[in-house]
Length: 323
Image 1 (cartoon, rainbow, N blue to C red):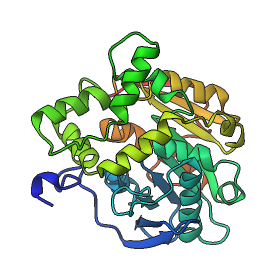
Image 2: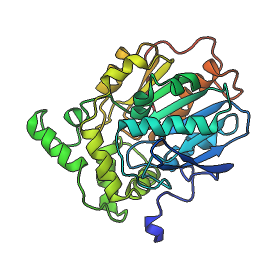
Image 3: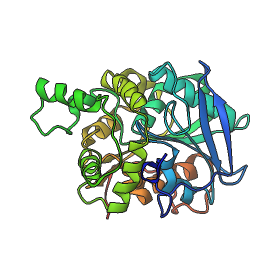
């Protein structure tokens, strides 16, 4: 692979740090998953599930910050990053993969905070209610995600809501065309579709490298799953304390999704709306996303010296302005 096609940046704050150890986890159907563990063994555990067309590299800023005080476990969804493509794509496979990672990386009786971005949030929803999930997850974060009507609600195509926009959005997101190298035009397209208008060039570059590194067939396969996604009935099963984050300029999963999740969850402990942020919030607003993960870990896993002092869980909706 040429330097211009490297699937992540290699310098700066969004370059993924080296893992303390890596392992291969086998899911229920035999699919193999690349898993990275950062931080000290025995520290409070955080598990990170990335979104569609991304990889563990997407969480670089969170991993680098949290690993000083936590054991951070990040894995490549099937077909993404260093996890081979599989024959089965679906929400059941997402749930299988997450519970397999939890079983392989957590000690008996240990629980973790699980954070999912976009398709990673859908992974959390899909796994909710499974005994393996409920026994091992202390709290969750749903970041820039939705449970249904993704294509109908998306604002990527600048048309009024209706059949035409839905059809065109489905065609764009489900395209089989290769993305090609990361060019100035490609950066502009990606920024428009997935990031806020004020996103800095280094953040756009970091996202573009990751997204363009996803194999075309994998991108298309998962797009078909997202097109028909309906996890509304799973929300009632997500009973662990759950925080929600959404960007007010998100075109892929507009903030209406975040508000709907916060209203439907049995135990929502806060909705954070990030003003001016798009869909790629862990890269666009890394400090804000990391802070919510820290707060969840501090409240539901035990003391964390890096957490912002607080005496009660976040229970009110908050709106944040980020640079």
